[in-house]
Length: 333
Ligand code: SF4
Image (cartoon, rainbow, N blue to C red; front, side, top):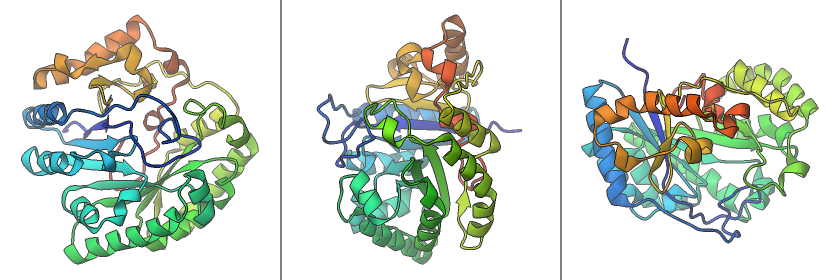
């Protein structure tokens, strides 16, 4: 049986044009803002191509930020990744750049998955992201993307990711219904975390009783959303993780098979099993000189983890490990 797809999530920039109250990359924060160098990104893309050919394995590269669509070389680099290197491509975006028709066209031409962040309806989304009118813009632009996909007969899987908080979890089904009407095919969710903005967290984190009600209601919501064609992703294990989180119960993971199916790269070029362990397990891309080095990376990462487990592994915050993306059309597991 062929190896499952390798997913590489690459945070290519720490710049962002929005001012979200819960995010470490909010434009309101004074902090260092680095971006990846396009030459390094292209060089590693070429290596991924060699790896995919040598080991007969699909590779999906998914850009993350900050706001990746505001990284100036993004579309040129992506075109090469798609057409020169034959890699699958995804991107997670706040959606402000979708106002541009040429951005929408390029996404439809070169991308396999597009994930747009939407936290709630209308004003709720706009206030949380400090962007008046953004929700309405997203509605129009995602509808335009769906239409473009219909007209051209191809284009990315359209997915929304939403952050569940005390203030919006009760409106999850209404949000699902709205985005399904725009042509969105899948929705993922995660719970508000406290790492990025500890000052925002206590008043907005999910309450245990809210998570319990959500888990009870989810099968019904899933069934009702099937009709307009929206799939709600997330495994049973993921829901358990959500419940434990809300109850402050730890979820240690002794073996996450680091690097076997999922890799994270940051803007400085460090590669690790997830974004939370870059400091302890991260290896610089300059140390990976060929497909063989990449094939051996999981065993190097596992050794590092065995020798000294990084603090986040004692309460693993990596949603993909618990099945956030299980049950969908595209894969990011
Ligand atoms: S934090 Fe989770 S995903 Fe990251 S290395 Fe530790 S166990 Fe694996």
